[in-house]
Image (cartoon, rainbow, N blue to C red; front, side):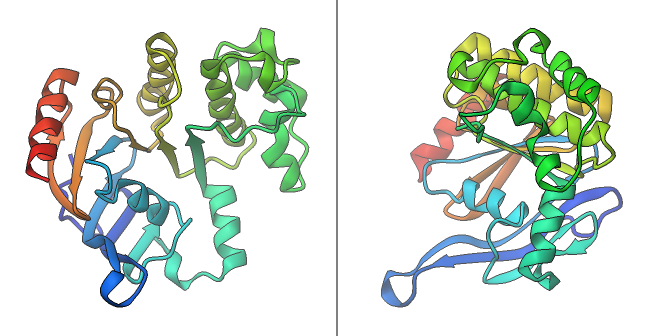
Amino acid sequence: MTPTGTTRATGQVVLLDSVRVVYGSGPGAVTALDGVTLGFGRGTFTAVMGPSGSGKSTLLHCAAGLDRPAAGTVLIDGTDLGRLDEKALTLLRRDRVGFVFQDYNLVDALTAEENVALPLRLAGRRPAAASVRDALGEVGLAHRAGHRPAELSGGERQRVAIARMLIARSEGTEPAVLFADEPTGALDSAASRTVMELLRGLVDTRGQTVVMVTHDPAAAAYADRVVLLADGRIDGELDRSSAAEIAARMTLLEEAS
């Protein structure tokens, strides 16, 4: 496992070095991240957990280049995001970063296969129909290709979002890292297991790097390690652990907050 404090270690796909994020100014300013240094190794699955307000979503947004920190450095595949202008940053996110969010980010008017193809079409590319079908087949939804989001269950919609990332890989724009923000937050336990098994499979069979923010110990149990945050700082790590062990550690962390 990559130690929490390690910087610029070989094989790290994402690195946050002394990252600080402050919202507001003056007496009312809130420090969301307070000098966080954290790396994510290639082909690893990391869950980020912490009490409400601990900074876990802010960490993910900075790591993905969605927010810029007030201080510190963020690198993806060796590229310093702080040196990129907004256009270059947008292109990097499009070509090198995959996203899976709790609300799926699907377009209601489009079918499953059209949603899968959309990011590549927006980039001026026309993915092969067979690639779209193969991506949906990998997540068990080839038979739902013509259905719109309203006709799909929450778990199926999340699987469409994962297929959207898979096709990017099959079309030659493999993401360096997949960020997942509460990917099972709106799902029942059965759908959650399916989604988590898919994410775990991306790591084990494809060598994908996955960074996931979650509040769910059962989801975090699929990860290689769990990074714990409290008050914008790292409060320790767990190597791959059971849901019960993670829940017990979270209880201690919340009681101390």
